[in-house]
Amino acid sequence: MERKRLLFVVLVTVLMGARCGRRSTRVELPSLEIPVSCASEIRLLECDARVNPPKCKKARVKYRRGCEEIVVGRK
Image 1: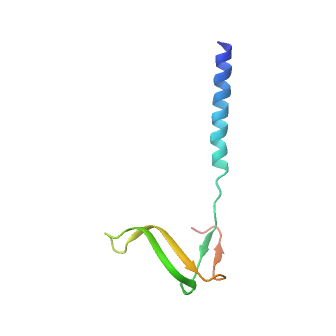
Image 2 (image 1 turned 90 degrees about the vertical axis):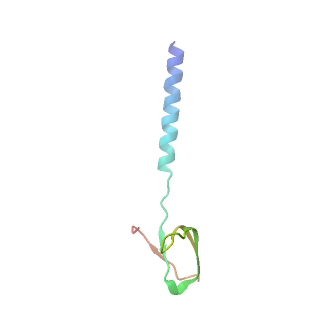
Image 3 (image 1 turned 135 degrees about the vertical axis):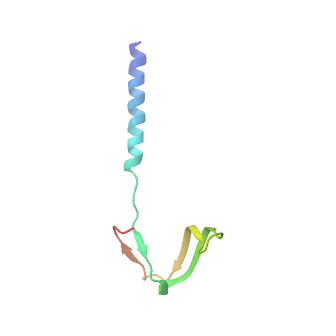
């Protein structure tokens, strides 16, 4: 009986530790602000064209190097 209890405590401790570890490894990446004059191509992906303007989940932007500006703390 005591062995099962010890095994249960160890298992719960390991599972809780693994769960907390995943949260702490999340990295927040900075945003980049690119002036429209620097963009050479903008591709909108996974768009709902039933609404005007279309709502898109993703966008890919090709731009000329050196035009990006890192913006920290603004969403």
